[in-house]
Length: 343
Image (cartoon, rainbow, N blue to C red):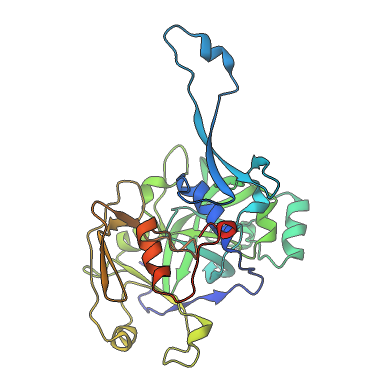
């Protein structure tokens, strides 16, 4: 059983992060595979499959597959490339891995469930590029508690076409004062070039384990391991995410951001002046998905029957339906639709 001293995990703003709303939007279009509903650079169009032999099978119909395209200023359509999408994280969290501990700055992502790292399994060229851009690279040979899981591998492919893959093992992982012993970690042996541009040293998935990519058998997420090892007490099986803003630096919390595991920071609750509200979660798709059937804008309630929402810390955007979006901007004097920004 790991230690029980619980502490906040302070979130570090990524100093190299460059805000780009359209790139973040394009990333989410690919990640969740939805179609834009307004005029703008990104549109879904029907594409005829390249394998035309299928078109001549008996009783077959010419099928089309909606594909996301970027419409350029000259009206020409082209595929959405990696450089059109956000491949960096605004927030990073320091995590200690191994014995003695190696610190990696990870993207905590509630929209995925793999814990993977830059590692010395990567080829020398990729490692050199990573080091020159400031990445910390985990070395399993430097940890006395590392154990390889024979026969296991992992591979993740992201919406921007980038991918990461490699080997699997276990090591001690310390989160907020809690040491998770023999936690499964995934070491990258192959990474797409896009990852070199980002500042993170890997990703820590906080979604449900059913979407973990390890084969032939999925591994437990850090939160699942915490619960199994009794690091998180019964009745406290939760984690919290509090993301402040530099705009709030003059407020009581000074704009701080942090995660907690196994407890709720009551000082934050008091400052908010309200009680914590809980909603049932539908984990069937692996995400933190819940009903969101109404919204209030400037005192006006907007009904959204049958609507569900997903809490995803992997993006800085809030995606809403057209009616709610129009209500939000309708409450802002001078706001108008900009087709180039698709909103």
